[in-house]
Amino acid sequence: MTDTPLILAVPSKGRLQENAAAFFARAGLVFTQSRGARDYRGTLKGVPEVEVAFLSASEIVSQLSSGTAHLGITGEDLIREQIPDADTAVELLTPLGFGHANVVVAVPQAWIDVRNMADLDEVAADIRARHGTKMRVATKYVNLTRRFFAEKGVSDYRIVESLGATEGAPGAGSAELIVDITTTGATLAANALKILDDGVMLRSEANLVASTRAPWTDRAKAAATAVLTRIAAEEEARTSREIRASLDPAKASGLAPLAREHGATLPYGSALGREIVLHCRTATVFDIVTALQSLGAQDISVRAFDYLFRPTNALTERLLRRIG
Ligand SMILES: Nc1ncnc2c1ncn2[C@@H]1O[C@H](COP(=O)(O)OP(=O)(O)OP(=O)(O)O)[C@@H](O)[C@H]1O
Ligand SMILES: O=P(O)(O)OC[C@H]1O[C@H](OP(=O)(O)OP(=O)(O)O)[C@H](O)[C@@H]1O
Ligand SMILES: [Mg+2]
Image 1 (tube, helix red, strand yellow):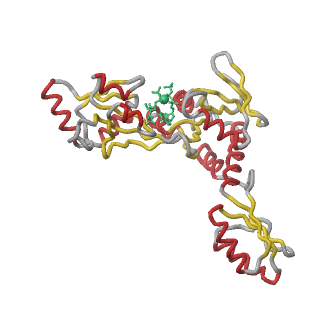
Image 2 (tube, rainbow, N blue to C red; image 1 turned 135 degrees about the vertical axis):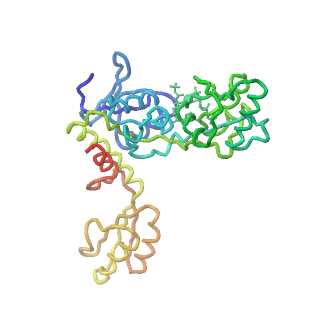
Image 3 (cartoon, rainbow, N blue to C red; image 1 turned 90 degrees about the vertical axis):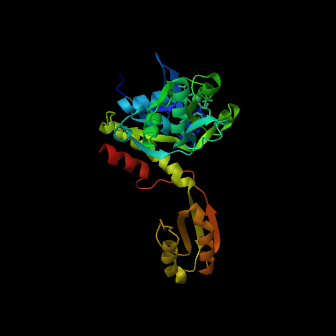
């Protein structure tokens, strides 16, 4: 074990690696990587007390579940599959907008009469009548499949655990249908499979996840806060704009109502002299510009930020609410 206060688990390979690295880079969090004895370890430049563990998306889930890692990036599909009590063990702090994939039930396209989960009962009965065996479902999402099939009232089947190339199972004759993840649908199409109409089990994307079981010492909380504050400041910057203008002080009384109406703020107060500054959501910029023009404002400029640090942020609040 290590005595570094905070372990941050980051995908080291596969679909999520590049996007995760880009996500941290946007927040000004740069990894310095070194090869450790058993796995890759690193640090975050300028953020002491954080150790970065480079792991597979699935190993990240295990470490968050056991509390070996405090924070990590991984897919919700893996969280729901691998952690039976996910809502107790981890907190999904925020979806990250990449790693989108659906976990789906797919059957051969040739089964033209089979469209939804309820139709699988007939398929199962048919297979039993013809071969005296159970309908076989190939998947590596064993737990998600059991849960979903039970919810849909389908019980006469057996799972064939798949370790890869799941979509090939029906063609190879090792299962009748599959449960797997899909993004573009290309792999399903290449294997002549179709998704059942009500066969989307989970819409997954990469999430920033906190472990509730990790040793959340005061130093770990402080280190997490340092990381989350930067991530939040980047997001706040990306979704905000600054509007500056020159306004006749005689018109300044119209400013606060204007800001309120558009959900904007006056971070430095109402006008001292002619210069006014508003912060607003990106989508409201042009409405505010128009309103300012109606108020007689001139020389209106709109700027983007690199980082915007607020007194507090939703990520840190969410974490601290959960871990106390
Ligand atoms: N098209 C996709 N296929 C699979 N996973 C995807 C896709 N798009 C996003 N993901 C996400 O990436 C996660 C990790 O998938 P990836 O393929 O990188 O790992 P893996 O193949 O499971 O790794 P391993 O080598 O351990 O099997 C998935 O669980 C899912 O959350
Ligand atoms: O809908 P699509 O865009 O075709 O993507 C889906 C495919 O991608 C994943 O496999 P991956 O390429 O990660 O290989 P793996 O089976 O080795 O994980 C997944 O297991 C599917 O097979
Ligand atoms: Mg994969």
